[in-house]
Image (cartoon, rainbow, N blue to C red; front, side):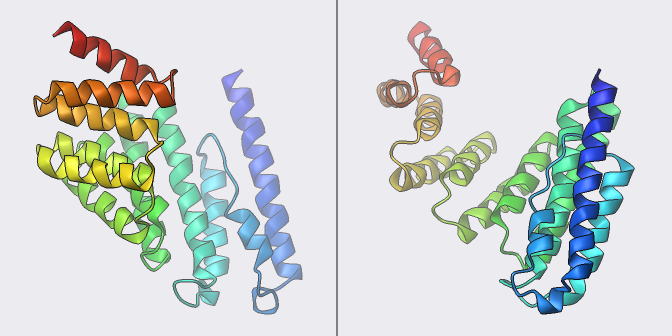
Length: 239
C-alpha cells in the first residue's frame, strides 16, 4: 500500500510540475511579471523524494535562475523549487526505516535548504529554520543555533523561530540567553502556548519552580491539548 501511494504521489507531482513548465513556455518569464507558473511550482509539495521528482525540481531551478533579479525578484522562485527539494528529503528522513538512509536524507535536506537560503539572497527565514532542524537531527546544535539566529534576524516577529532558537540555545547550555529569547517570543505572541511551555522548561532547568509551574499552567490554559505541557507539569509536581 505504501509503495502504491508513493508512486501515485510521484505521478501527481510530476504531472503538476510538467503542467507548470509547459505554462512557463507558453508565457515566458520575461513577459509575465507575476511569474505565475513558477509561483505554482514553488507551492508543490510531495510526501516522498524520488530521483524523478528531484530532477524536475532541479529543472525548475535551471529555468528560473537566468531571470534572477535580486532579493525580491524572480530568484525567489528558484529558491522555492530548491526549498521543495529539501522538503522532499526531509519527508524521506522522517519516514526512514533504515537509519543509514535517514541520515543521508537529512544531509541532503540540509544541503537543499542551505542552497535555497542562498538562492533567496539570504532572505528565506523558513529555509533557515528548516536547515536548523535538520542540523539538530544531524547532531550539530551549535550550527543550528547560528541558523536560527539568522532566521530571527530576518523575521523578528516569527514566534516559532524564536521558540526553536530558545530550545536549541537551552540545549547548548546557555540558559540565560534562552530565557531572553523566549521572553521576546512571548512579547511578540503572548497567546502562543508552545512558547509558554518552553518558558516553563527553561525556568525548571534554572531551578525556578514556581515560575515554571505558572508557565506550564498558562500553556494549558491556552491549549489544554498540549501534551508536552501536561507531562512537564506532572513531572514538576512529582519532584
